Amino acid sequence: MTVAAVSRCLDVLESLVGVAGGCELGDIADRVDTPRSAVHRILATLMARGWVVQDESTQHYSLSLKLSTLAFRDLDVRLVTDVVQAILDELARRTREYCRLGIVEGDTVAWVSRAQGAVNGLRYDADMGQEVALHATATGKAWLATLPEEEAVRIVCARGFFAHLRLGPHAISTIDELRRQLAETRARGYAVAIEEAAPGIVALAATFRSDPRPGAAVAGTLSVAGPISRIPPERHAEIHAALAAAVASVEAVWQVRVRQRGHGSGYGARTARDITGHAETTAEVRP
Picture 1 (cartoon, rainbow, N blue to C red):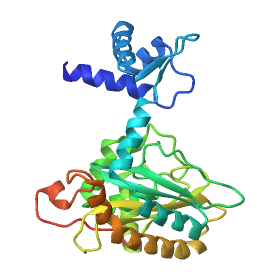
Picture 2 (picture 1 turned 90 degrees about the horizontal axis):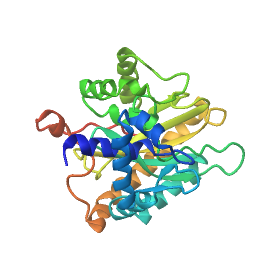
Picture 3 (picture 1 turned 60 degrees about the horizontal axis):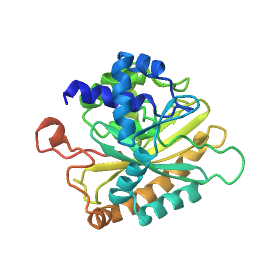
Picture 4 (picture 1 turned 90 degrees about the vertical axis):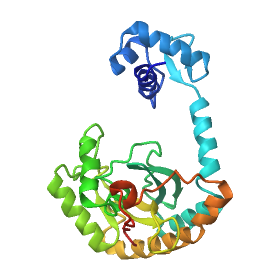
């Protein structure tokens, strides 16, 4: 199979993600800009392997549960253990807001675990599977601020400032604004996003290292998010303190989690050596 064929197959799979009721063959072909005959052959192979199912009444194609099952199995093996989830749960209880843990992988961050702390009133329950808009989320900005600035700019520009996503009214869209916000994040010690990823939502985030040593690589992020009416600037110091405590707790157990899970050394955060080829350590946005 050629690289182009593999790419088309992945395009077809990605076109079916999150589509309620599935898609018609023609819609899929239009989405991936590929002839219907070629898409039909790809779908037939994916169905035979159990990755795609077809509704007998509508003839629409949908992802099977195989992808979700394998993803959960992989997450269980190498990511969040009960002790890390307990730390996230405590952060949610303490802040009474929606909390998420993100993991650095390559040039992005992926949310892998969450805890809901809101007990009454409005509840913010964001989709865990959504792409992290690095420049418009507290999670993304916290991580970007730990990178060499030019590398952070390159990553965001390569994704076109995530123009394909529906973001909030205050999402930045220029390199100058990005540089300014990353500088503010580094100076503050944690990231803030006010109606940037979504209207009416405020989030704060900080990074954690793979272990407490000053030179350890940044492994992920912890974030707290909720309605703007409930997270005014007056609460930022309180939430920052809760994040700081949670970060310290995660750093204390992260390497234990890695050893317990048999985590591969090639997975997770990149250091400046990975980026530049020089022996520098990754900076960190400390809570």
